[in-house]
Length: 549
Image (cartoon, rainbow, N blue to C red; front, side):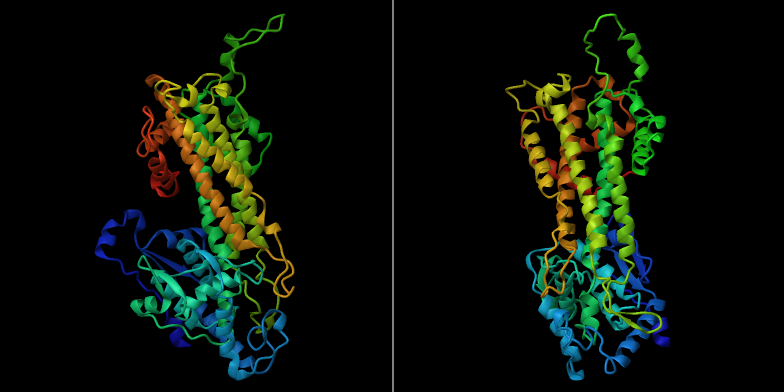
């Protein structure tokens, strides 16, 4: 036990000198310490985005694991314990004899490693591995400290198991996807390592890691839980927060281009409807617009409009369209949904989602902590917000490109040359329209698609991992639409006189300047696909679009 108390495990990631030289200061070496209870979404994001990040587990967590491990080993020949000496699911009434208890765990892993389809992104797989490691470190799963060490080694060596996208129903956890991770741990299946797809056995050999030998309960401890949906969900929350931040900035820029009115952001207005998200968004917008000279005060209308005895029509726009005027009221609930998802998933990644679990008194508790509905419903709610963000963005794109909507304030399709002969951004709008429609079709809550399975033992399921994978596509689409909107807004700014562009806020001028690093103004028609892809990737990953810049 003394050795366990002293033991802390860290494996450095071996990077070539070339990669080391290419690592930015933002990717300094980072150690993520796990104890089963304090994992954050930031930690998960750091692991998958920083190649120099490594994982370490605390001695206290290992001691806790050892205690419950001894309980499993002492009781597995004395009482029936699900998944330790019984069959699984509807075969629970089959009692397995002692000599086959290890075979049972290997059969469980191999028998569930049956996924089909494209490989899940390796960043999602690493996130799931980190969450699973943190889960077993709680000590309630009955796994051994040696299993925690083996999983830590796999993560730190950057060996990503190939996990097919189709297979999990998210109830009894992400059995199929997690089985593919467990398969790699025992030296079977395929992995992605050093940029190449290869056998797990070869990758482990290269990294100097021995295949792990499963003991009783350990196959079940690896695959029984919500770690895949939670790991993916953690990364989706970070991306969703980023898309909202960008959408606030594009909304502010759009409002300046149309010379919107300041009272739509007035604190008194929003205090009369004090939803947390609405107040958060409007504060951010006011901060970004603090130095703008393009936003109008409504009092300025008094000199232009007189109340007469007769009814007449004015050419002054008194109120902006909703996609401009209602930005806090539309992005606000999205922000709230994402923050709810953040809280839910952060709780989940520090929870025990195994079955059975061992409590502090040593009791074996059989229950349903593996059911993924908390995560699935939170992700679905967040996804709906991301679909609405896409639609909000698409409407503003249409506003600037459609002279029938903007009243001719801007040239058709923002042509900077001869409209009719030149296309301007006409073709780009088709991409925005189709992408928004695609997201609409993906918007239905996937957690409602419960279908009984497993011999009707799992008679109501969460579909959590599929919900997360669909949400990932919706967020990818949101980035596409935000990239198109950024190009549209930058092109609209080109139609203003230089003096008027200088009257825009620093935030909007910075946004346009950053967009221009990837997409030049469209004067003569040219293909934009490569430029647009580069901009979209920058929106997703580059620090120049982060809030603190």
